[in-house]
Image 1: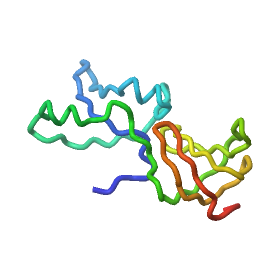
Image 2: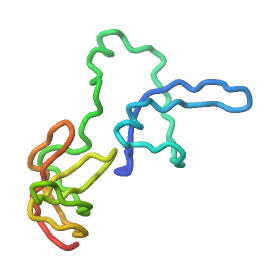
Image 3: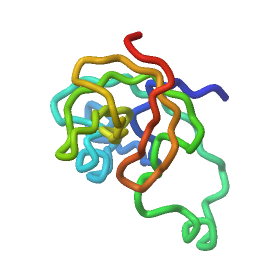
Length: 131
């Protein structure tokens, strides 16, 4: 299955019957992380779940926090939206996740290689400037 780079969040939810409509609830953590904004319209893809229910062991392996949307060594094209307190460029990707880009200025579009990944931010090194 191919998953779009535009994916904002991924979670499991039940479809509930609400009289004349059906409802899929978005977990609060998706709002808290900035992946989804209340009142906005989103495209939703539904994927059928397995018939078997997850065992307790599987549930223990599910991380409680969303995982970073980038990996070390990954190449990304980003736009610098802000400058941090230490003068580094700040770019935001999926779910508002921050990539710190030393040497970049606001408004620049740069190609970066992700060199360090933390739970709430990553660091990217500029490979190519002004795209």
